[in-house]
Image (cartoon, rainbow, N blue to C red):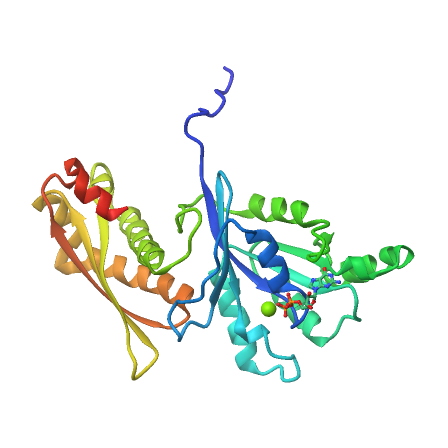
Length: 303
Ligand code: GDP
Ligand code: MG
Protein backbone atom coordinates (compact mmCIF):
# COMPACT_ATOMS: atom_id res chain seq x y z
CA UNK A 1 0.00 0.00 0.00
CA UNK A 2 1.26 3.43 -0.83
CA UNK A 3 1.84 5.81 2.01
CA UNK A 4 -0.45 8.77 1.88
CA UNK A 5 1.26 12.12 1.49
CA UNK A 6 0.81 14.43 4.46
CA UNK A 7 -2.29 16.58 4.25
CA UNK A 8 -1.47 20.00 2.83
CA UNK A 9 -4.04 21.75 4.96
CA UNK A 10 -2.43 20.84 8.26
CA UNK A 11 0.72 22.85 7.79
CA UNK A 12 2.96 22.39 10.76
CA UNK A 13 4.41 25.40 12.51
CA UNK A 14 7.95 25.26 13.79
CA UNK A 15 9.47 27.40 16.48
CA UNK A 16 12.24 27.52 18.97
CA UNK A 17 14.79 29.38 20.99
CA UNK A 18 18.22 29.95 19.56
CA UNK A 19 21.26 30.91 21.61
CA UNK A 20 23.47 33.28 19.65
CA UNK A 21 27.04 32.61 20.72
CA UNK A 22 30.29 34.25 19.86
CA UNK A 23 33.01 36.45 21.24
CA UNK A 24 32.29 40.14 21.65
CA UNK A 25 32.46 42.08 18.41
CA UNK A 26 32.03 39.03 16.20
CA UNK A 27 28.83 40.53 14.75
CA UNK A 28 26.03 38.92 16.74
CA UNK A 29 23.92 42.06 17.00
CA UNK A 30 24.50 42.94 13.38
CA UNK A 31 23.31 39.51 12.30
CA UNK A 32 20.29 39.49 14.57
CA UNK A 33 19.27 42.89 13.23
CA UNK A 34 19.63 41.62 9.71
CA UNK A 35 17.56 38.52 10.42
CA UNK A 36 14.91 40.46 12.22
CA UNK A 37 14.90 43.16 9.57
CA UNK A 38 12.23 45.77 9.71
CA UNK A 39 9.59 43.20 10.30
CA UNK A 40 9.92 43.10 14.04
CA UNK A 41 10.81 45.72 16.56
CA UNK A 42 13.31 44.58 19.08
CA UNK A 43 12.58 45.51 22.62
CA UNK A 44 14.27 44.52 25.78
CA UNK A 45 11.62 45.69 28.19
CA UNK A 46 11.62 42.32 29.84
CA UNK A 47 12.44 42.02 33.52
CA UNK A 48 15.69 43.71 34.50
CA UNK A 49 16.79 40.51 36.09
CA UNK A 50 16.68 38.66 32.80
CA UNK A 51 19.98 37.00 32.09
CA UNK A 52 18.98 35.76 28.69
CA UNK A 53 17.81 38.75 26.80
CA UNK A 54 15.60 38.21 23.83
CA UNK A 55 17.54 39.99 21.13
CA UNK A 56 15.15 39.37 18.31
CA UNK A 57 12.25 37.40 17.01
CA UNK A 58 12.28 36.16 13.44
CA UNK A 59 8.93 35.11 12.07
CA UNK A 60 8.44 33.52 8.67
CA UNK A 61 5.29 31.93 7.25
CA UNK A 62 5.79 28.67 9.04
CA UNK A 63 8.52 29.26 11.59
CA UNK A 64 9.37 31.51 14.48
CA UNK A 65 12.79 31.78 16.09
CA UNK A 66 13.42 33.60 19.32
CA UNK A 67 17.06 34.66 19.32
CA UNK A 68 18.67 34.96 22.71
CA UNK A 69 21.71 37.01 23.61
CA UNK A 70 23.72 35.64 26.46
CA UNK A 71 25.24 38.41 28.56
CA UNK A 72 27.80 35.90 29.81
CA UNK A 73 29.30 35.96 26.38
CA UNK A 74 29.46 39.69 26.14
CA UNK A 75 32.45 39.78 28.43
CA UNK A 76 35.93 39.11 27.22
CA UNK A 77 37.02 35.56 27.71
CA UNK A 78 39.94 36.21 29.99
CA UNK A 79 38.58 34.36 32.96
CA UNK A 80 37.13 31.01 32.13
CA UNK A 81 35.62 30.45 35.49
CA UNK A 82 33.45 27.55 36.48
CA UNK A 83 30.52 29.89 36.67
CA UNK A 84 30.94 30.74 33.06
CA UNK A 85 31.03 27.06 32.22
CA UNK A 86 27.86 26.58 34.18
CA UNK A 87 26.07 29.42 32.40
CA UNK A 88 27.04 28.01 29.05
CA UNK A 89 26.00 24.48 29.90
CA UNK A 90 22.72 25.57 31.41
CA UNK A 91 21.87 27.75 28.49
CA UNK A 92 22.67 25.12 25.94
CA UNK A 93 20.45 22.66 27.74
CA UNK A 94 17.56 25.09 27.55
CA UNK A 95 17.49 26.16 23.92
CA UNK A 96 16.50 24.36 20.75
CA UNK A 97 19.56 25.29 18.75
CA UNK A 98 22.73 27.33 18.92
CA UNK A 99 24.15 29.74 16.39
CA UNK A 100 27.89 30.08 16.82
CA UNK A 101 29.60 33.01 15.13
CA UNK A 102 33.29 33.22 14.35
CA UNK A 103 35.16 36.26 13.17
CA UNK A 104 37.08 35.74 9.92
CA UNK A 105 38.99 38.94 10.46
CA UNK A 106 40.86 37.88 13.57
CA UNK A 107 42.78 34.80 14.62
CA UNK A 108 40.62 32.39 16.59
CA UNK A 109 41.25 32.53 20.29
CA UNK A 110 40.54 30.90 23.62
CA UNK A 111 37.00 32.20 23.69
CA UNK A 112 36.21 30.57 20.37
CA UNK A 113 37.66 27.25 21.50
CA UNK A 114 35.72 27.49 24.73
CA UNK A 115 32.43 27.91 22.88
CA UNK A 116 33.41 25.26 20.33
CA UNK A 117 33.99 22.76 23.13
CA UNK A 118 30.70 23.65 24.79
CA UNK A 119 28.65 23.26 21.63
CA UNK A 120 30.41 20.01 20.78
CA UNK A 121 29.15 18.58 24.07
CA UNK A 122 25.63 19.94 23.71
CA UNK A 123 23.00 17.65 22.31
CA UNK A 124 21.32 20.12 20.04
CA UNK A 125 21.62 21.44 16.50
CA UNK A 126 24.51 23.86 16.13
CA UNK A 127 24.95 26.13 13.16
CA UNK A 128 28.34 27.77 12.68
CA UNK A 129 28.97 30.89 10.64
CA UNK A 130 32.25 32.52 9.77
CA UNK A 131 31.37 36.20 9.77
CA UNK A 132 33.08 39.26 8.26
CA UNK A 133 34.06 37.36 5.14
CA UNK A 134 33.89 40.69 3.33
CA UNK A 135 37.09 41.64 5.15
CA UNK A 136 39.08 38.82 3.63
CA UNK A 137 40.96 38.84 0.37
CA UNK A 138 39.52 36.20 -1.91
CA UNK A 139 42.64 34.07 -1.84
CA UNK A 140 42.66 33.98 1.97
CA UNK A 141 39.12 32.60 2.16
CA UNK A 142 39.81 28.87 1.73
CA UNK A 143 42.50 28.91 4.40
CA UNK A 144 40.38 30.75 6.99
CA UNK A 145 37.36 28.55 6.25
CA UNK A 146 39.54 25.48 6.75
CA UNK A 147 40.79 26.83 10.06
CA UNK A 148 37.23 27.44 11.18
CA UNK A 149 36.24 23.93 10.11
CA UNK A 150 39.07 22.56 12.24
CA UNK A 151 37.71 24.38 15.24
CA UNK A 152 34.33 22.70 14.87
CA UNK A 153 34.91 19.25 13.43
CA UNK A 154 31.69 17.46 12.39
CA UNK A 155 29.95 20.76 11.72
CA UNK A 156 29.75 22.71 8.51
CA UNK A 157 30.76 26.34 8.49
CA UNK A 158 28.68 28.92 6.66
CA UNK A 159 30.61 31.85 5.21
CA UNK A 160 28.85 35.08 6.08
CA UNK A 161 28.89 38.80 5.99
CA UNK A 162 26.31 40.05 8.43
CA UNK A 163 27.15 43.53 7.18
CA UNK A 164 26.46 43.01 3.49
CA UNK A 165 24.02 40.15 3.95
CA UNK A 166 26.07 37.71 1.90
CA UNK A 167 25.35 34.20 3.13
CA UNK A 168 22.61 35.31 5.51
CA UNK A 169 19.78 33.59 3.64
CA UNK A 170 21.51 30.22 3.60
CA UNK A 171 22.30 30.55 7.27
CA UNK A 172 18.74 31.46 8.15
CA UNK A 173 17.42 28.52 6.15
CA UNK A 174 19.72 26.18 8.03
CA UNK A 175 18.47 27.52 11.36
CA UNK A 176 14.83 27.30 10.31
CA UNK A 177 15.39 23.67 9.33
CA UNK A 178 16.68 22.97 12.82
CA UNK A 179 13.56 24.21 14.59
CA UNK A 180 11.23 21.65 16.13
CA UNK A 181 7.48 21.80 15.83
CA UNK A 182 6.14 24.42 18.14
CA UNK A 183 3.77 27.31 18.67
CA UNK A 184 4.06 30.92 17.65
CA UNK A 185 5.41 32.45 20.83
CA UNK A 186 5.04 36.04 19.75
CA UNK A 187 2.47 37.58 17.43
CA UNK A 188 4.03 38.38 14.08
CA UNK A 189 5.46 41.86 14.10
CA UNK A 190 5.87 42.62 17.75
CA UNK A 191 7.68 41.79 20.91
CA UNK A 192 6.24 43.46 23.94
CA UNK A 193 4.88 42.85 27.40
CA UNK A 194 1.72 41.16 26.24
CA UNK A 195 3.53 38.36 24.40
CA UNK A 196 5.50 37.53 27.52
CA UNK A 197 2.19 36.64 29.11
CA UNK A 198 1.21 34.73 26.02
CA UNK A 199 4.49 32.88 26.11
CA UNK A 200 4.07 31.94 29.75
CA UNK A 201 0.49 30.82 29.15
CA UNK A 202 1.65 28.67 26.26
CA UNK A 203 4.39 27.05 28.32
CA UNK A 204 1.92 26.20 31.08
CA UNK A 205 -0.61 24.87 28.60
CA UNK A 206 1.99 22.72 26.93
CA UNK A 207 2.80 21.02 30.22
CA UNK A 208 -0.87 20.51 31.02
CA UNK A 209 -1.48 18.94 27.61
CA UNK A 210 1.32 16.48 28.19
CA UNK A 211 -0.35 15.20 31.31
CA UNK A 212 -3.93 14.85 30.16
CA UNK A 213 -5.62 12.88 27.42
CA UNK A 214 -8.75 12.35 25.39
CA UNK A 215 -11.09 15.33 25.51
CA UNK A 216 -9.39 17.07 28.39
CA UNK A 217 -6.54 18.78 26.50
CA UNK A 218 -8.97 20.58 24.20
CA UNK A 219 -10.82 21.93 27.18
CA UNK A 220 -7.73 23.48 28.74
CA UNK A 221 -6.93 27.15 28.45
CA UNK A 222 -4.44 29.14 30.42
CA UNK A 223 -4.73 32.74 31.50
CA UNK A 224 -1.92 34.60 33.18
CA UNK A 225 -3.44 36.71 35.93
CA UNK A 226 -0.35 38.60 37.01
CA UNK A 227 3.39 38.88 36.56
CA UNK A 228 5.18 40.62 39.37
CA UNK A 229 8.89 41.27 39.39
CA UNK A 230 10.11 41.50 42.95
CA UNK A 231 12.23 44.54 43.72
CA UNK A 232 13.95 43.08 46.77
CA UNK A 233 15.38 39.99 45.11
CA UNK A 234 15.71 38.36 41.71
CA UNK A 235 12.37 36.64 41.63
CA UNK A 236 9.38 36.85 39.34
CA UNK A 237 6.02 35.89 40.79
CA UNK A 238 3.45 34.64 38.35
CA UNK A 239 -0.17 33.78 38.95
CA UNK A 240 -1.88 31.74 36.30
CA UNK A 241 -5.16 29.90 35.95
CA UNK A 242 -5.73 26.63 34.19
CA UNK A 243 -9.24 26.86 32.82
CA UNK A 244 -11.34 23.78 32.12
CA UNK A 245 -15.01 23.36 31.24
CA UNK A 246 -16.35 20.89 33.77
CA UNK A 247 -15.82 19.76 37.36
CA UNK A 248 -14.73 16.31 36.19
CA UNK A 249 -12.06 17.86 33.97
CA UNK A 250 -10.98 19.90 36.92
CA UNK A 251 -10.58 16.76 39.01
CA UNK A 252 -8.35 15.28 36.30
CA UNK A 253 -6.20 18.37 35.93
CA UNK A 254 -5.85 18.77 39.68
CA UNK A 255 -5.04 15.08 40.15
CA UNK A 256 -4.93 13.08 43.32
CA UNK A 257 -3.99 15.38 46.15
CA UNK A 258 -3.10 18.02 43.56
CA UNK A 259 -0.40 15.83 42.02
CA UNK A 260 -1.10 16.68 38.37
CA UNK A 261 -1.32 20.43 38.70
CA UNK A 262 1.77 20.31 40.86
CA UNK A 263 3.71 18.51 38.14
CA UNK A 264 2.44 20.93 35.52
CA UNK A 265 3.50 23.86 37.67
CA UNK A 266 6.97 22.51 38.37
CA UNK A 267 7.68 21.67 34.73
CA UNK A 268 6.32 24.97 33.46
CA UNK A 269 8.24 26.89 36.08
CA UNK A 270 11.50 25.33 34.92
CA UNK A 271 10.74 26.34 31.34
CA UNK A 272 9.85 29.88 32.31
CA UNK A 273 12.96 30.20 34.47
CA UNK A 274 15.05 29.04 31.55
CA UNK A 275 13.67 31.81 29.40
CA UNK A 276 13.64 34.62 31.93
CA UNK A 277 16.91 33.52 33.48
CA UNK A 278 15.62 34.28 36.92
CA UNK A 279 13.94 32.36 39.70
CA UNK A 280 10.20 32.09 39.23
CA UNK A 281 7.43 31.49 41.68
CA UNK A 282 4.45 30.13 39.79
CA UNK A 283 1.07 29.90 41.47
CA UNK A 284 -1.26 27.76 39.40
CA UNK A 285 -4.97 27.39 40.07
CA UNK A 286 -7.46 25.23 38.26
CA UNK A 287 -10.79 26.89 37.52
CA UNK A 288 -13.97 25.78 35.85
CA UNK A 289 -15.47 28.06 33.27
CA UNK A 290 -18.45 26.33 31.73
CA UNK A 291 -18.42 26.24 27.94
CA UNK A 292 -15.59 28.72 27.62
CA UNK A 293 -14.94 27.37 24.16
CA UNK A 294 -18.31 28.72 23.01
CA UNK A 295 -17.66 32.14 24.48
CA UNK A 296 -16.20 34.18 21.64
CA UNK A 297 -15.33 37.18 23.72
CA UNK A 298 -13.55 35.03 26.27
CA UNK A 299 -11.52 33.27 23.59
CA UNK A 300 -10.58 36.61 22.13
CA UNK A 301 -9.25 37.65 25.49
CA UNK A 302 -7.15 34.52 25.76
CA UNK A 303 -5.48 34.99 22.39
P1 GDP B 1 28.63 41.69 18.74
O1 GDP B 1 29.45 42.24 19.85
O2 GDP B 1 28.96 40.27 18.48
O3 GDP B 1 27.16 41.91 18.93
O4 GDP B 1 29.07 42.47 17.41
P2 GDP B 1 28.36 43.65 16.64
O5 GDP B 1 27.21 43.15 15.85
O6 GDP B 1 28.09 44.75 17.58
O7 GDP B 1 29.47 44.04 15.59
C1 GDP B 1 30.73 44.52 15.99
C2 GDP B 1 31.33 45.33 14.87
O8 GDP B 1 31.60 44.51 13.73
C3 GDP B 1 30.42 46.44 14.36
O9 GDP B 1 31.20 47.55 14.08
C4 GDP B 1 29.84 45.87 13.09
O10 GDP B 1 29.48 46.84 12.16
C5 GDP B 1 30.98 45.02 12.59
N1 GDP B 1 30.51 43.90 11.77
C6 GDP B 1 29.56 42.99 12.08
N2 GDP B 1 29.42 42.11 11.08
C7 GDP B 1 30.29 42.46 10.12
C8 GDP B 1 30.61 41.92 8.82
O11 GDP B 1 30.07 40.92 8.34
N3 GDP B 1 31.57 42.58 8.13
C9 GDP B 1 32.22 43.67 8.61
N4 GDP B 1 33.14 44.22 7.86
N5 GDP B 1 31.92 44.19 9.81
C10 GDP B 1 30.99 43.61 10.56
MG1 MG C 1 26.08 42.69 20.55
